[in-house]
Every structure is written in C-alpha cells, then in structure tokens.
Image (cartoon, rainbow, N blue to C red; front, side, top):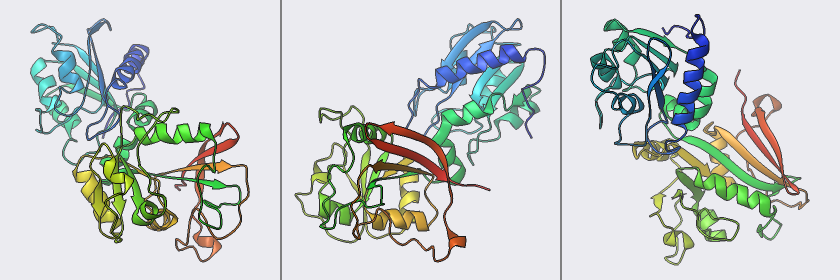
Length: 347
C-alpha cells in the first residue's frame, strides 16, 4: 500500500516539483512501449539539484537521467520526485529502484503506481532498503499524462479509439455507398492529427476494397505528417496489389479474420500501445460488441442522409437494458461539425 504524499508541511514544495516533473515527462515520446516519465531531485532545503526525463525505449530512465547529472555523493540524503513509481525489473536498463538505493537517496515521492506486471514493486524494494516512499501526489495529473500507456499496462492490450464520421441521423454514407467529405475541412484535419498521435490505424478488408484508403496522416495541404501510424488490416478477403495501403510509409500488418483478442495481443507484443479504428461498420461493431473500445470519437456533420448505411451495425443490444452507456468527455465545434469524445460509462 502506498502512502499519500498530499500531506505534510513540505507538500507545496513537493507539489511544485511534481508539476515540473510532469512538464519534463511530457517531453518524452507519447507513443511506443515505454511511459513518459519525469524526475526532479531536491536537496534537504527543497532546492532542485537535478532534473531528468525518459526519452524512449533503450534510453536512460528519468531517475537515472537525473542522477547522472550529479557528482558522486551529491544525491545522498536527497528527495526524488518522480511521476511514476520507480521500476523494479531488468530490461534494457537496470531497475531504477536499485539505482536510487545505490545513490543513497533519503526519500522518494511519486505520482502514479506502476501497474506493469514486470516493472512494479519498486516502492516495496525502496522501503525494504530503508528509503521513505510516498505515492499519489497529483495522481490525477499523472494519470492524465500517462493516458493510453496506463490502459495498455493495466489491461495487457493497446488503448482502443473508435472513430467515425456520420450525419446527424447516424449514416456514414449515402444509399449508394459514397461517403467522401461528410464532414468539413476542420474535422478532417483533426482526424489526421489524431491518426498521427496513435501507434496504429486499423480497418477491415471491406473498407480497403470499397474506399482504397491510404491510411496515412496528412496536413491540411495533403502532405504527410512527420509521424505515421502503422496500418493494420483485418479480414479474410484478398486485397489487390494496387491497394493504396501497400504504398504506406510503414509496412502494413495483416490479420486473417476477426480474432480481436489475438490481434490486440499481437500488437501489444510488438510494443504498440494505441489503436485508432477507422474502418467500416463491421469492424467497428465487432470491437463494440467485444467491449474493447476505450474511447469514441464521433464527428457529426449537420446533414441528413437516410438509408441503410449506418455508422454502426448490430453489436448485440436486443433490449434497452443492454444498452452501452457512455460518458461525454468533451464536446467541441470544428467548423460546422461537432466532435463528441465519449468513453464507456463505468460504475
């Protein structure tokens, strides 16, 4: 059990240091296997001795990065303020908990407990070594920063975002199947920005055959953004060699069928922690039915289309008691369109 670092006469100093650690953490990569972590080391007077942050897989962890800036002995008796519980496992680097013990620090204050099966236990190891440990300082801010990484670490699968664009009456395409430009330019730019923020973009073979999407992230001028999601295609239908997805900057990943847990386990094993689902009511409904969607992005255009081309198909709700309740996280206007960000309602 962790102590609550929200009490004590030095809380304002610790909170200020933690806010700085969160700022440092935000400099690290927002995607990939490892979390964003920041660290501030304070002396006995609450003055900053060193700062550090994690720059990505294989690089020094935040605590070690900060310690590396200090001459031997200067860390003894210090307080280490870090956004995530120090890790306790040997991976590409040795445990941060061990580095802090060897450095002779007196106290460690962290924001979020590490939920990872292999990396957790750092707080216990530190306490066993006689170091004072407190957790939970600015925990809400820490969890907000870690976002999809926390979900992936807790559930053992990537964070799943399901996106669709539809008319006000819930149609994703006209009767003849045409669906291009339901929403306006501002909404489309927002979608591409969010694509670039994810590790992968997933569609079904039906969407590839019907729309031949490039599955890239582009700016308003149509140029490729610096970061591109890896395309993932699920389904059993063969795709032509001329399909645009084959020209993607990243080699696509293909999965035969709809074994969604198997697909997600494979992606997770590759260090891919976020999936952006773009394609098709069949795929979208399958993820909803399986209870695998962590966040919904719904772009609503001020138009009516009618007809059978719904954004979602049947996902198992046969009576009102089975409805999938959502909570609205945000509501924004993008030009003439509305973006609703919603998450499954937890009780």
